Structure formats: structure tokens, C-alpha cells
Length: 156
Image 1 (cartoon, rainbow, N blue to C red):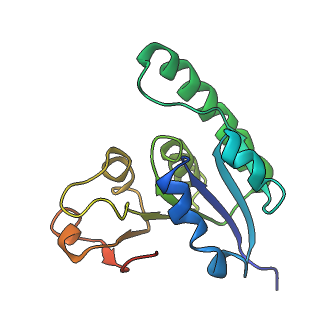
Image 2 (cartoon, one colour):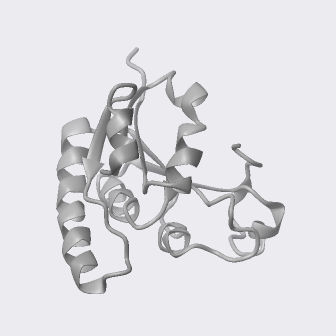
């Protein structure tokens, strides 16, 4: 039996740090990581199978719109190339299009809300919550924000 194909996606920084904490789990599957290109992620290419999107901070809105659009198309082609069974994400803007692409192809989406959020949602969490097959929070207090979520505890 072939192992499930898992695509892990997040923005750089804390989101990626949290995602990489799942390595003991994702090593058991055929996996691929998608994140943004920067100095830190270039070093990850030696350790993991990885695809890189354009870094897209939202502080320059006009440029961000173009980068986000480009990343949506690139995410679509990565999805078609890797053909994952499951998307696992810790979020931010980079991950949202991939989650919707996965649902378009009837694949499972697992979203892990940020450890930093204890009482309020992230934008990506709000966008993915309605379509997630499994929505995990890391604090019990977040179940007030996301009633259908599962408290998975800290992944640190």
C-alpha cells in the first residue's frame, strides 16, 4: 500500500517553525513542504523536499496583490504536480489558496491555528475554518472562537 501524500504549507517565520515541529509525524508519509523563498528556507532545501513561493509580506499592498496572484497560480501547479491526499497547514496568507485548491479536488485539509493566538482568530484561520476537514487549535480558549475545532495542545 502506498503511503498517503501529504503537502505541508505555511508562510515563513513562526508558522513554518510550528509546521516543522510535526516532522516526527510527516516523516512517516510521502511529503512535500511549500513555503516562501528567503535565506532561511533556502537552507531547508538540503534537508527536505521543498517548493518555494514568492515571499509576500502584506506591508506593500500593491506589490502584495501581484505576489499573491502569482503564488496562487504557482500553488495550483505545485498541487497538480505533487497530487497530495492531504494538506496540512499552520497558516498565513501563503497557505489559504492551497487549501481551497485542495477542496476543489476533494482532498483533505488540516489547519493548525497559531500557537500565538489564544483568544482571537487569524485571518487565514477565519478563511480556512469553513472548509477544513480538521481544524486544530492549541489553546482550549480558542474553542470559543472555533466551536468545531479540536484542541490538539501545543506542538512546541
